[in-house]
Length: 454
Image (cartoon, rainbow, N blue to C red; front, side, top):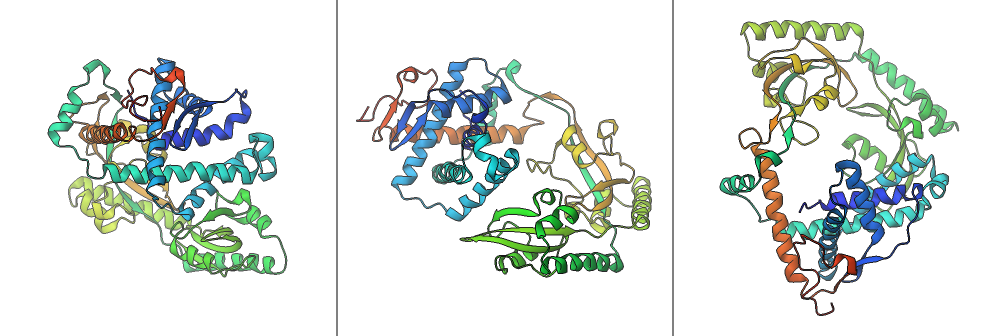
């Protein structure tokens, strides 16, 4: 039976809270109790709806049973954390709560629309999100302590893989390992001065009484916050780049900072509210523009460098170390997938990062022409791409997918450790299941026996 992650279950519960107003309301009830915590039928149905949406369903009752066991495990971990007085940072939880509240507010079209869309006010959503996310951090901490010593050997990875039938193995789409050389043109001091002057004028307008939020909507070049009047939502220390964070935390409510320069450009910041160790600010971002002449020089430089690499005058790896402005230069240009940290990209992920390069048509060892890109910091640049390795579409196998199989084997070993722990804990913990779940097939834990209160 599959074991969904705690993060998946929690995400399904949170997502369910924000969509339930759009669906018929069912009569709810208690499906299970662990210690002093409960699992409602609606919790299972919300998670089940997410599984159907993303994976499809073969057997509805089996899937519901699998989801329930995941929730029971999570509640057992939470129960253990409560008994042992495991500490969870309220500031850490609060910071994540704000992200969910921002998403819900944006979806509803404003705080005043939350009850109309989701059946909850802003404060009610805050309290429910806080409880769910607090339990997530608590269960993760207890689970980490239980499984931190678990590891798997190469022989165990091989044995784990061998238990699957060939026709049941998933198909992996074609994947690519790539290296890059990036050149970001240097922006002239005159252009930097122009942006500073424009931002200073906006700051003076705010100080004279104009609305910061309205000016942010009109002039800010931060695509994520401009439409919200520059508001970023609550965050704690360590979440923003250091220059921005230092200026923001030094402000008093309503105060506007001097110009702050970060890797993203130039900002002015206004503190909206301070709540414990978290603050909410709005900002206006303006970014110096790269001139067309500077971009052309970058392209010519890279095209010349590509010719030298193709002639064998320098290796791609050495050229990356010597000339690239990319974060990958110290690794000889080797690029990590931002989604999972691996060295491999599928076509879709690659195209998102390098939309002008046809990776599918390239051969191993081939180098692209200089191509315009936008960096993660929203700066204009040019790059060369080398296709280091192409892995054709295939069934999962130990040769091409060892890291993937290793991670799956490790997660299975950790799950086994947690199930064994639950089988011990259930003997001394109050656990009760609704009648329709007592005979669930495939439970890894004997939830209905052992506890003196059952």
